[in-house]
Image 1 (cartoon, helix red, strand yellow):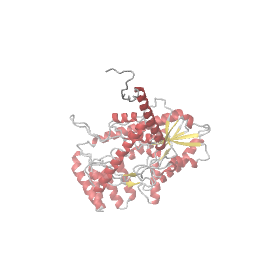
Image 2 (cartoon, one colour):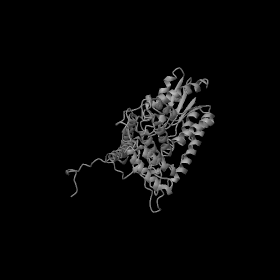
Image 3 (cartoon, one colour):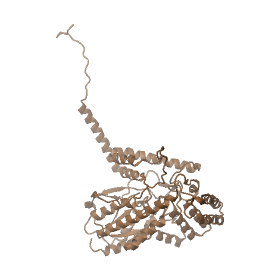
Image 4 (spheres, helix red, strand yellow):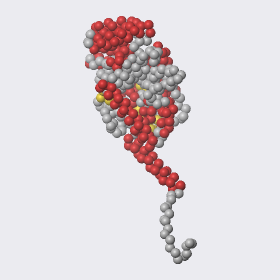
Length: 495
């Protein structure tokens, strides 16, 4: 029956519905709020730069990086922040060893020429890798900070443009930026630790198999870097990276406690040869003879990159000071990579047996016997870093410290991959300095002289981790650098 004007029927109240436009607006407001929270969190904790640094370190390369050109005209330069940033959540621990007084502190800042360039002052840029950055110590304990008071009578400003993990090819654009936009008087180049930072002895898998690595691919890293432009997504990525690192450290600690040797972990053993003896690089996985060719190619590229950086500075009338790289001579040969026990197939069985016998002799403190065994094996195959390390341990056990230090240096020279070829890197730096008439500080020699005078060999007071000078080491560098900077500045005229 149809409703009449007088009839009353109950009506269901219609629920209000938001328009699509209001829903989209609500989502946009929430996204903006999340992004704003991300920017605030990054301002407080500085995780964005740490994430980008971590992603850069995940890259793998099988070829050296030539000097990259700065063709973008990017005027923004990344500098180390003198304020250090927040306290680390836990102490710096590497290779199972706690490094006292180390953060690590990694705070950086972006700078533009108008914020940095001042009339009436001489700007000195420090450019290099993590050793130049001062990792893992406070800025006040690093040589860029320590050298300024030594030159307090001069209008000088030290700017630390070092970048953790960068190779010489990747640092070339930093030199270009500095000389083109920041009008420096002098550039201090302290590099050479990272040439093989991203290198891996990757085997060639059968066509039916995909290469297996524990690292993300280049495409994945590029996607993560792109997404990291959002500070909110950066926070998620950084938390994931931190969780991954913590999980890896937990695995390493568990392996150390149980002494398992079933899978290789980099940074397992800071000092010693046990891990390198137990975890060799099998010849079927990588032909050790390839390393000799790869090594030369990387060293030649390093020399070329260094020459190009000096040329770039000289063209802008900027003086350059070169530093050799100091190193921890007793660093485990298997610090980042498995090491071959033999490079010459016809002697592999004898050399491998000699390594096992010498390792037993060292543990039993039969150092004379171990030394004779190693020397015989080196006559057959002079290339394995493990053999040179065992020789050094025998000499150290016999209290022949100066010879032991040389033998440890040979082990670092023969070490395959990252942080190997230390003597060759320093020889190239020295040769380039001589041929280009560039002032040089032989930091490794300074460190060795300091230790020998005090009978504190092996840089034990000057490098506590794999390759980074301690605050005392930075003090020695500053004392050596100050007179060269004074000479460069007083001879350059007005800024």
